[in-house]
Length: 44
Image (cartoon, rainbow, N blue to C red; front, side):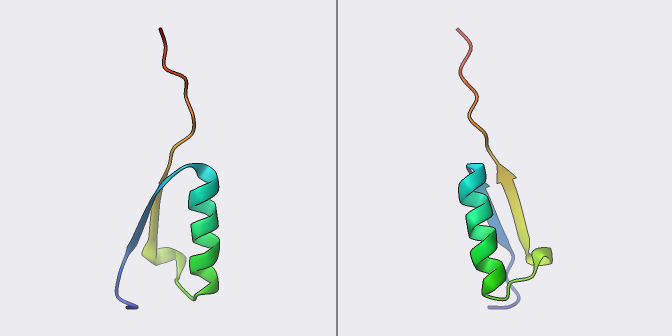
């Protein structure tokens, strides 16, 4: 539906790929929100 917001969360490549697909489907950037997680090694 056109009145839904979309929330994406994950690796940079996954989030950006989803944004590209959603844009091609006509979803406006104002409806998309994201958190991009990058790999960070756990300190010992």
